[in-house]
Amino acid sequence: MAHLCKNSKLWAKYEQKPDSFLGKFWLKSKSLSLIFALLLMATMARAQYNQVSDIPYREAAEGYAQERCKLDVYYPTDQKDAPVVVWFHGGGIEGGNKHIDPQLKNSGLVVVAANYRLLPKANIDEILDDAAAAVAWTYKNIAKYGGSKRKIFVAGHSAGGYLLDMIGLDKRWLAKYGVDADSLAALVPFSGQCITHYNIRKQQGIGPLQATIDEYAPLTYVRPDAPPIVIISGDRELELFGRYEEQAYFWRMLKLVGHKDVTLYEMQGYDHGDMPQPAYKILKDHIRRITANMTSVLP
Image 1: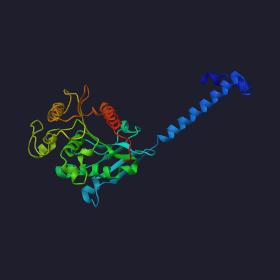
Image 2 (image 1 turned 90 degrees about the vertical axis):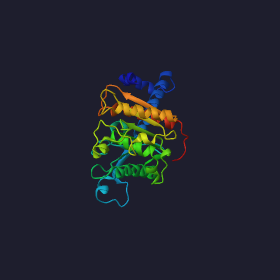
Image 3 (image 1 turned 180 degrees about the vertical axis):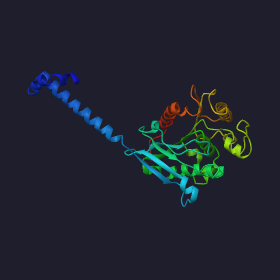
Image 4 (image 1 turned 60 degrees about the vertical axis):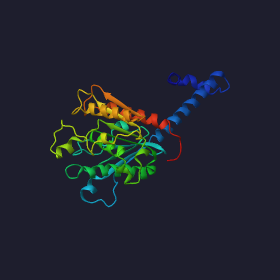
């Protein structure tokens, strides 16, 4: 309608003649413009988000657990039954802090970003228990923030990917909190270690290039009935300690045991630290794919 506005004085006279052809056209154009503007305002009003920070996800936590066992929730204020991403940060399970990447914002998603205790102040059992507790908190509370417990996608980078693989495949961790790991919508590890994590091996006096597969390796718990799994790796020539090959073997073993929905991506040209940036789109694409097959019912 911009060209109409250039000659507003000319068109004004047609507004005074509503029964003429041009007068009707002008009035209809104004109505359409008004409708478009109202729709745009309504869309902008709907696209409102809020964030609540540092929510404790453990009851009666003390000391180091009280300091670390907190999460942030970023959510659209007008939605119900929205997909949820629980995000675990990386840092070798000895560093890092919760954060929400801009690519996960303004996407119609509820995002839960969780901290967890770290080595060496905590042991690996406590850390895995923290990850399970954060997911269980989400399962039981996310409806308050417009999210659906049927649509919980657990994702994370590096150490975060390792933790989610462990609690998503070894069902004991979530079962402690009354949650069935198979009720998760999907597991989406970004460059997660699939053998025993190198910093756990370090505590055992084992170097990062000596592989171990024990009770702390996601590969130990490969099974056909796990939730959908989307495995995303950096470039095999740029990844950390052969991480791509670990994930490729993880993918192959899942396929061989009969898992029906497991996918492997390699982000060519991206190293371990950079690979999350293109990977977020893959995460969102699979959220759309998986939720599209779900019936629309209340969470």
